[in-house]
Length: 154
Image (cartoon, rainbow, N blue to C red; front, side):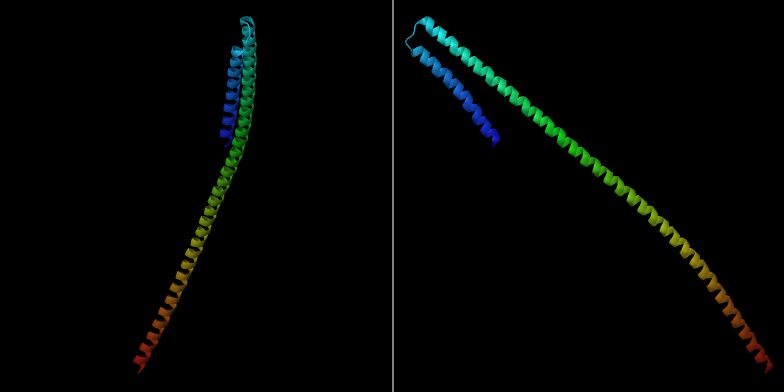
């Protein structure tokens, strides 16, 4: 919207300047003056038009430089903010990766300890079972021997 307004203002100023020049020229040509006076008036009006054009050009150049400086400042500011935020995101990703790696190592260590405990428990249980089985086999053999002796004694 502001581009359209600035374009309209610019067109208006250019139209006014051209209209003024054309009007002044027409007035000079239509006025009853001598050739010398007419040439002098035309030179004056041409000088005035040149001065106004130079002033307009200078103003446009200054405004252009102001806007360019403003744009540089804003883009620099935005670039700094983006850079800072990017650095923060990278840092957070590094922290998260480190935390996940630490958690994975802790989990692996805990799993290793559980496996070792289970292996020890299984070995101990196996030894207890083997001992119990040996005891029961001995008890059965003793019973069989008693029954055999009792059967022979009869």
